[in-house]
Length: 457
Ligand SMILES: Cc1cc2nc3c(=O)[nH]c(=O)nc-3n(C[C@H](O)[C@H](O)[C@H](O)COP(=O)(O)OP(=O)(O)OC[C@H]3O[C@@H](n4cnc5c(N)ncnc54)[C@H](O)[C@@H]3O)c2cc1C
Image (cartoon, rainbow, N blue to C red; front, side, top):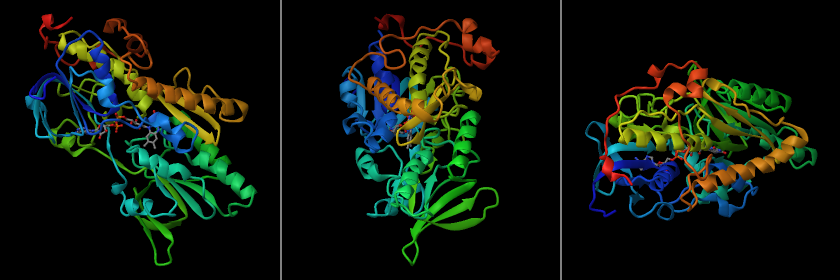
């Protein structure tokens, strides 16, 4: 696709999820003029991040294939570029490399603006050697090397595990407090850590998981294992005081009261903020999420815009596994939109959350919309031999899922690998019918043809 082309059928903006859907469409018998705008050329696989950071998974498995190896040259690729301005009313985009594109349909998986800069002093502290402060972000490969000792050297005082305000990147999959408690328990037994050493969990939210089932289990485990849980406290700042102690400042979300608290170690998931260009364009709501129809993932106000992954405002737990399960829905509904047919691929809210209990113990949670437990939810009890067996299995299967999704192969990725799912007409959709969801909640716009039919194979 020559760089001089600026009028596209479909433009994709985002990271590895947009790249994957574009790649799947390329081998799906369409010949739309497509472009991808992404601000990097390869991606960290979120499902392998934790495993690689502690050596459970080989480091080489951390990154996806490059964009240019995944996507064939007949689509335009603008890597290391950003969309700086969205003009949805005119179907137009402005890019940081000076280009201006128009589109018939737009697909977004832009996630959140997730950065340690959102907590005052955190960037300096995480880079101070020996600070024992780790930031959990999935931004670059070097971070994973730096995070190798997260949770391992807590020898005294308090360790703060922090999750930011919902909605955020890592919700449902950043709760490592039980994992750290397992190391600490052994370290105390062996005299490597002082008896006063503790693990604490702090968050501005009022729960660990929005999925009530998982939340109950997590809280019960915390109670049994002496992990202190503090809800409703937002971390605003970290700094050293005059004695060299590390101090975190927390603000109570209800009363506004501010406290200063000393700590020895911290593992922090920094706040996720909406991207300014999405707010400015009106594509995101004032809450900072892209308001799509939860079933079709079509934008509620701009009919030719689709969004998936972390950036969407639907009631499910944001994970990479969820984004992978949304991708065939996007792929199918996009084709339906272009061809003027009904959007009949339905996302049921499926998400998967690893639940780590110790160095090599795990179970997992899975749910659909309305936090309805999935059949496979909590299949493995969270203790004993089964959890020991499952830990390795889950690490591997999660890693392989990410690998397949972003491999150089043009197959369709999990959960279907080699073929596209087929979707029945809306009237016959099992999920909608069995939950009594009226079709008026699914159909939003009159279909109209956007690409001439002879353009197709
Ligand atoms: C510590 C941690 C652990 C996690 N562990 C797991 C796990 O074990 N399993 C799991 O399933 N999930 C896990 N997650 C969650 C997972 O990372 C996210 O759900 C997933 O990355 C969401 O993908 P996304 O494509 O929606 O957004 P992102 O991964 O945030 O990607 C969005 C991309 O779009 C780019 N972008 C944004 N705006 C523009 C623009 N205007 N122009 C060009 N490019 C743009 C961004 O730079 C970025 O590269 C974890 C998250 C964290 C923080």
